[in-house]
Image (cartoon, rainbow, N blue to C red; front, side):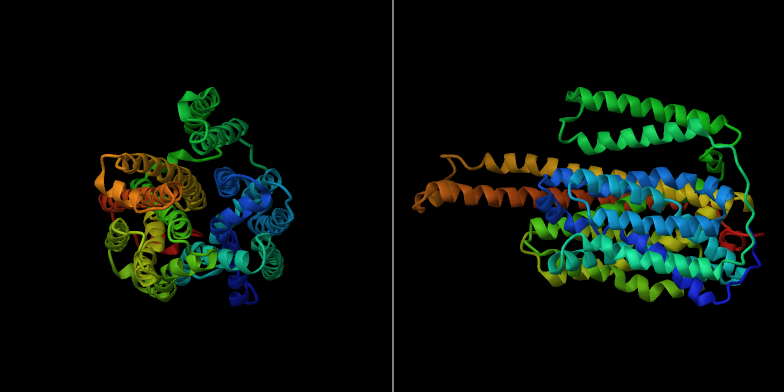
Length: 506
């Protein structure tokens, strides 16, 4: 990688790179609040509509580890430009999809071409900034990574309510074309060194089969009654065998597609565990809150977006300061503070009830933003801090890959647990409606239409079941964040010079 190249216009090059990343990360959440509308328009159940999120996350996760191979083969600039253009085309195809099957195929394509975009953007940004400015460049990328998932539900909700859901995909087209044109123009004189590395077919095939089959198990398990279904049992066995072969092969191959030997570094190991689990919990919050606002509290998609939006305020304000001054602190302290704030906000949500007001929901989101602002840049710096210079790009790719898989797990497991626990609480609450319960008897005796009253009671019980389940999940998420404080303190300083350089060109 050439570390001395400076684009003719550094600001314009940075905008082009950041816009593409913003667009790609935005697409991980923009469809969340639109799922009920998409399901209704395409005539499928809400369970099936979650594949719109899952298909993107899985193909994105599978494509990410290929970044190192593809950059060696085609060069970073060419890979970025073509991936961004392909993303725009895939977005357009998602918008014109006429069935859920077509939409899932195009979302899978979109996720696959999006895979290399984030790690390559990280590498290019690090390459065009001098070493003393690289923490700021990483902080800028962290801000984009934080703001985009928050902007997604708001933008998605507003577009869905005011236009139609295909426009959540169509808006990517002009952004992607602009970003790829700007970066191609600004980086055209950058030195390119390519090679023809051997492709690790065994690693690639076992990765695709293992992660793909695992995701099918997670997504379809609920519908198919888990291991009472032959389909789920067979798919789980295939996944387990493929992942076992993948792990053994990658640890013994000379040119593995995913370099698992990076985990011999303590900071990379502890930083990656913290990143993956904390991001999965963060992703679960972003998925659950908008759905809960719409299903339980009756918010429109737009208002659900507005209620979630304050999460982005403090990251936007504080990220430049975190980028500039974080190196003066023990980064474990900043990360631990982040986990405390995130954990506390989860515990506050675990006391929410159906009558909770907009201001209370928004203020908790605002507070969580403080935790988010202190999270990405310190954790990324810690996990890169003890890698060798030639391992940095690969380390960034592996960490992002695992983070994406973690988010995909979170999406499946959170939806499953929320639904499953709600059914359990519904049955427990419904047991109280008996001829021997004086309150139930009084309600029915005062009603002129017992059927309507029973239907109303059932609706209220369903809502309470969902609410209790929501509270339980947030209680567990709170403890996950607090337990990660122990993990991050197992990393060892220093986190400065090598990590501050952030990943390119020593």
